[in-house]
Length: 196
Image (spheres, rainbow, N blue to C red):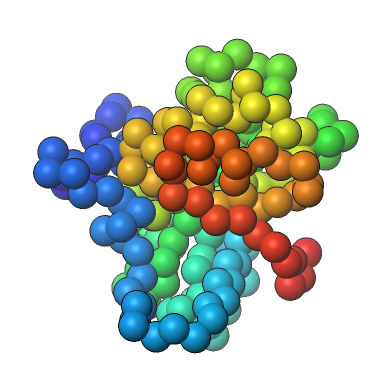
């Protein structure tokens, strides 16, 4: 409860009074003394197809991180099941791609043409309806993540809420990792798509 701000529309992550943050508290444990190189695998866009999501939960080991669609029905139930199996969990954050609106990530997409307030309201809409996740994973975003003016307030909000940022890196020109680093927001970025 200390990591959750209850709102009329659902829970929002927050930093607890004693400084605990969701990205640390909900992270999957690993042996920090093991100095071998690490590989992180994230399976995204889960929760839209119950059959696929069930198969992922049944087949993949807990070391694989799972990211659930921001519009997935029963998202909190999926997250709870994934966490019980030991998976670290992210939420997909839809962002404007090149070619928008022909290519549209869906409801609550963050847009370069939207005001800062509108984008932060959309971000809040993505973060609500579920808890127990460590951060957000960008979905598409090849137009949004190259726009520092649009992206910076989003990253600042993630930092203020105790979350981490994973840049899906849908473009090599993304400013996400650099801007996140400047504000000391915990971050990671994709450097290989296994299967689009």
